[in-house]
Length: 300
Ligand SMILES: NC(=O)c1ccc[n+]([C@@H]2O[C@H](COP(=O)([O-])OP(=O)(O)OC[C@H]3O[C@@H](n4cnc5c(N)ncnc54)[C@H](OP(=O)(O)O)[C@@H]3O)[C@@H](O)[C@H]2O)c1
Image (tube, rainbow, N blue to C red; front, side, top):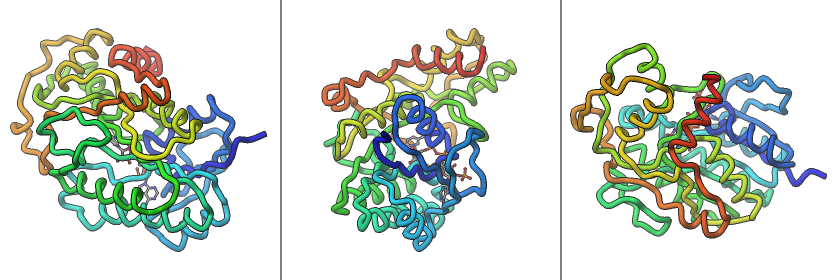
């Protein structure tokens, strides 16, 4: 017998695809996939519905019809620099749409599992546990914090999972830090890497697995799920060079301020994962293990 029905929003994205893959392999939930595009990016024969979560009435109708026990929201406006200029658009998706999911979940008594980020912090004194005080320094961070607050104060059953620096592979997904490094370094191109952004990079498969454990244990509240190693972007890149066999002399070390990015980044960040480790016995992967998995997935 199936354990229950899960509606996944944003199932075409990097995390959405990993959730579909891990939940299919490791659990017995009945999955309904949805994203803004007409078709699913995943070729297998899943139940897929097109759903733009910024359309309030459509969300209400779809949730009422599908009647999920759990909604996992993987949709978001994730272009951090784009959020600075596309403020209205990004707020619509990162905040208003989350409120639509809350409103739709309430009469159906569905639980909402929502993903957030270390960008809700200022990066002055990381790593952060679940009780640390947020102070976002970018519009993306402000929008993600507003969404968290909407979920937390909604009165519905919820889990907010904070994560950071996602990497992995998927069909037609945007480039992430690890795949960008692989594209550049495998072509022998020189790259500029910052040594002053500290945090834990997270392979999506591990995040999806942690989310599954959290759901199976029926946990509610805020949980950090991120990779085990808290390190600089530079140290992550060196590890990737070691595992994939790329030359480290292609790397030029720079500072974040040299990038002149529109959105400020939290520098001394990182997420402490002791809560999931102690409550679920979930041990996140370290960087080396995660990169070895990525190498295997890429067929290297
Ligand atoms: N990526 C990271 O490093 C990172 C770090 C910390 C936290 N997170 C959080 O993790 C979650 C998943 O991120 P991700 O990297 O998997 O994002 P992603 O790859 O950008 O996936 C988001 C998906 O949502 C879809 N989408 C866009 N607008 C939509 C709408 N109106 N209705 C329904 N779906 C829509 C996107 O489609 P299009 O591609 O066509 O727009 C995309 O397929 C987000 O909550 C994000 O804030 C990510």
